[in-house]
Image (cartoon, rainbow, N blue to C red; front, top):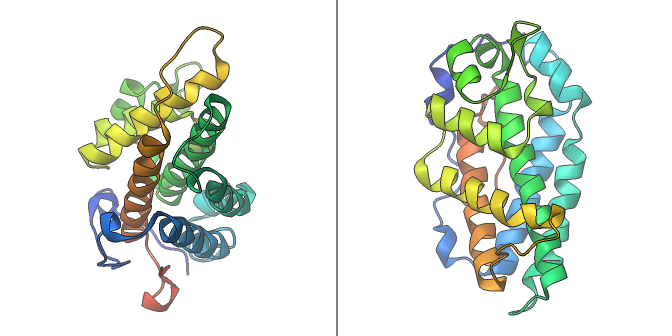
Length: 217
């Protein structure tokens, strides 16, 4: 049975993912938990026909949620050492940025019926196609309009929005010839922890037929 999601349900927290503080988990286990959650998210939402509304299921069915799992596993490359070369840092931030984008796109795609009619906030986030008179599809947005929309709609807390902005800035070094700040290994690991916290928040906000389907770490 397809589910119609109310315009306010996107900000309601329901699912309990974990009560263990992210800060107390060893970084290698943080990556394990990220991979576990993304594996379960991919398994359910890539085949959500009959549960998600038709348009949302269409978006999710063509998304590469399996790549989110692979990108999660690749984080292990960057958290093994206490230091990273500039090239390693640039690639590490690109890895994390892709994960952030994919997770927020998943959330907005599940609630696509609400997203596509939220005209004022879409326009303020530059996520609206004025020529077509319609929302840009979440799967085509970059991190900046995703962050702006989440801020305008008050979907995510300040800590998560700050993380998105930081990762976006660091990741942009991959496109630049001029000097840009790329942080260090410690900042990257802290951001990986922040991503697990964001991923937990996203899981809490997603609707499921019953608790047995909710991803667990």
